[in-house]
Amino acid sequence: MPAFAGPGSTNSTNSDCARNGKRRPAGDVAADMKKIGFLSFGHWQDAPYSQARTAADVLRQSIELAVAAEELGADGAYFRVHHYARQLASPFPLLAAIGARTNRIEIGTGVIDMRYENPLYMAEDAGAADLISGGRLQLGISRGSPEQVIDGFRYFGYQPQEGQDSGDMAREHTRVFLDVIQGDGFAEPNPRPMFANPPGLLRIEPYSEGLRERIWWGAGSRKTAEWAGEQGMNLMSSTLLTEDTGVPFHQLQAEQIERFRKAWAAAGHQREPRVSVSRSIFPIMNAADRAYFGRDASSEDQVGYLDGGTARFGKTYAGEPEDLIDELAKDEAIAAADTLLLTIPNQLGVEYCAHVLDSVVSHLAPALGWR
Image 1 (cartoon, one colour):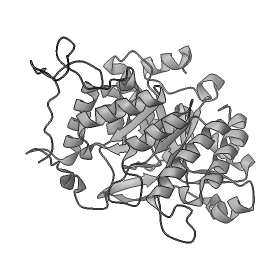
Image 2 (cartoon, helix red, strand yellow; image 1 turned 90 degrees about the vertical axis):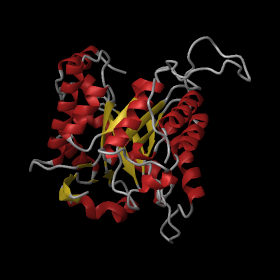
Image 3 (cartoon, one colour; image 1 turned 60 degrees about the vertical axis):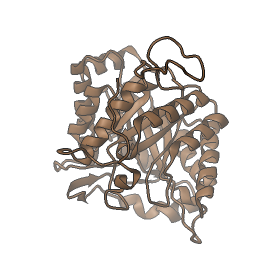
């Protein structure tokens, strides 16, 4: 029974790697095949350069881009979730709308801040969106990132229990959420209900079978990746890590993935876990690409501070396609992952973002063995 305090396609080689906690073999064509999707931050701004001036613009364009992504052969449409910002915040209406307009692509988040969530209500929303899409939801969740306001979750009616911090609260919300989406009954039925109940304890409805295996944890460090593996969640790793060891970003992230897989194997989970990494990749195909991203051709990793600690930010990949093919072939974390999420500049509009996706899917991916 959940205890929650409310407000105020794989192959045998890869399966063996997962069970043994080993890194995927780079250069093995079967292991290198990737699902490729986009990740949108969903910004809007009433500015001359922005084609997303309002929240309505972003929501409608997000649906249009997901449809376009499916048509050009991409595999996923993912969205960031931020509160108190001119960005996408409430994901489930958007995910449900995309699910109703598409037939094949995965639909997900990267990530939902669990400090803000009522896990039972979230389970209902997630179940409904997953059923509308026909079981294509891939839900990324986490403890959250730096906020626009101080302890913004408190305004939503949540605060950590005595002796705990907000991270503990996020993990507790996650525990309850993972428990209830498995479909077991836990709630005592009313002996005189308005409508007839099935026998036994009642579960959250609507229930969507298999959703539990499609939950991802957005991990910012090697330690949190290990925790995700222990809990039986897939791993979602972004373009930054909240730690630095002095090695290039892609190597640190590859170590994070390796530790995740070892923790997963040690926990005895039987299925193969999935791993996604995010990258900013902009092939220079025309004059517009060069104007927008030509200056990023010499991009390097950056080391800075985030939430009071050292963080390493991955570089932007921008350049001629043949140069990017050489660079991306050396990215150890991409090689270790089965899913690649491309960050897209959503304020440049649907047509341009679809062009960026197509440039990667049609020109880079086949040369790299991802297709």
